[in-house]
Length: 368
Figure 1 (cartoon, rainbow, N blue to C red):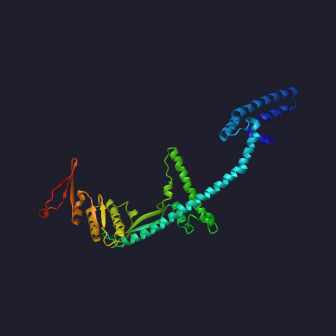
Figure 2: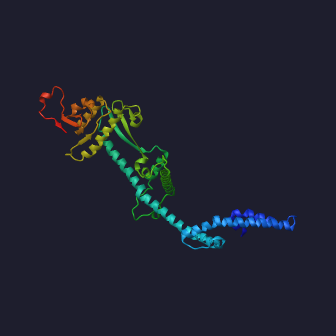
Figure 3: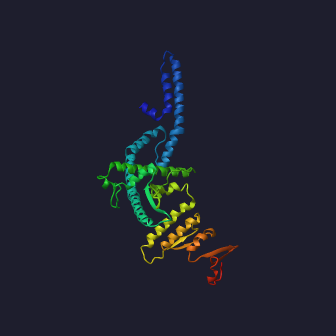
């Protein structure tokens, strides 16, 4: 009993030991031993009162107020508090543990249904769309170059591992009526541990981001929206093939040494391919392409092959460009308008090359 008491109240044990020594005469007179024991008892009583008033009773009072009960204060109520503690450990915690376990199963169930399989479906759809896009890209030649989209798992080791979890055959579609308990008989334990690891990583980063925001810190950790976006687990690139030399290179590698115009060309080819996927579904489609600040970083010798590509594909291009680029663009345009700003007014009028003004129809300049 003494050991249990001192385990609960460690500050009192040294004083009790001192009083015990005082009661042992050890060759001293009985009077001296009694005086020593009396002093030790006094210090023990003082320490006990201080402990009760400063530590135990305030804690008991807070407990009574928080849980709306009326247990006695001080040592008189120790047994009732201890009984409540034992009940909490034996019964309530077990009940809460069961609820927590069920909540974890429900969370994993929703993760599998609403996130994990959806990302697998998104990745497979992306691959299908890029295959269809590449079929169109293979028919589009820009100068001596042909482009092709490449879609691969992320080069980041951790994201690559999570990618394998997403596309694994164990990631099966689950309907609202399905549950993990129903799949337990056929589930692969190794795969389930991988899913758990992915969930733990997501929650750890979410918690870290939450704490960082609360503390006003910035963090480089991925956000929840990053983890549930299938594009996080993929790397995209464009393979450039020279049709004359047969040499191949990836745009991501050559872009560091190339001009902005060389990097823009694949962008416009990709736009053409994307729109053609839609326009080719109908023979009477408008085949319209709108480009603002067109070819802003491209030189004339790279603009001309692009305009020839637009014409070859029978695309109706409506573009806005600067005067510097008009020399290369205007020969491929059926109609060109010049826009001039003067103060708060804009003047818009047809633009004709020198030597063609005699053939130009009379038309008043429009102002706004």
